[in-house]
Amino acid sequence: MTLILIAVALYLLAAGLLVRSVARDTGDAPRPWVWPALGAVILHGTYHLLVAWRTPGGPDMHFFAALSLVSLGMAVMTLLVAIQGRMAALGVVAFPLAAALLAIYHVYGHQAASGLDWRLQLHAWLALLAYAALAIAALLAVMLWAQERALRRREFHLWLRALPPLTELEDLLFRTITVGFILLTATLLTGVLFVENFLAQKLSHKTVLSVMSWLAFGALLVGRWRYGWRGAKAVHWTLAAMVLLLLAFFGSKFVYEMVLRRA
Picture (cartoon, rainbow, N blue to C red):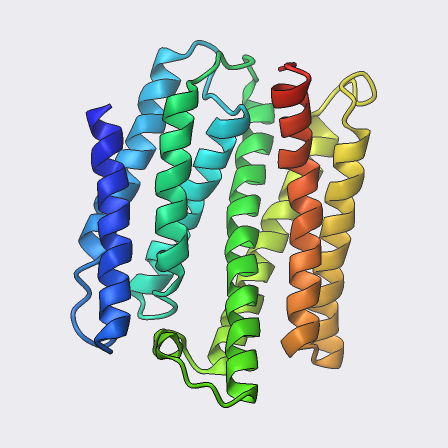
């Protein structure tokens, strides 16, 4: 419990320091939020490792565990991007989200793993990484929409200081989508190769939604390359594809595990 409290406190401290740096317009100054964020990420990952060691059959990847792992991936990616001096404002959302989902996972409790072999574990880890990367892309899309809207209305809010120029933010969005799309492609391929008894496991709806999301992200990348899609069109495609992806994985897990009480 102490480890959880320290991790949550460090996540919130990092987010608070980020908010203060924006308020004081000290974006180019030394970044004191990096160390608490790094400590929180390490403790977050350590907690999952400790749970995995205590759980026979491999790591816990049930509903709240998966949410916590995705938020950990988002926090790590945010930290890596922000250390380079780009989009530290992501941490204002990603760090408190990681803190909340880690706490919920701890309170809800862990469940025994399903005893997946290495191939299905690889498929599951690729899926979680893909969701984390594309969730970051969704946050970037929302920020891009908010920035465009504020500039169009000539509303120069304080939070605009925390964002990079519009073109740089858009470039980072598509780079993130590209990484997520590659990971999602690998997820679908390993699913086709390694998942057996497809119909017996009632995975058809999950696969259909995942493929629809993959097609939407792919169409967005092609549209960007071929037709120069940007702005509101890019935001709408990104958020629509992310909704499909959330329904595919977490929507299915919520219904089966939380509503129907099935593993």
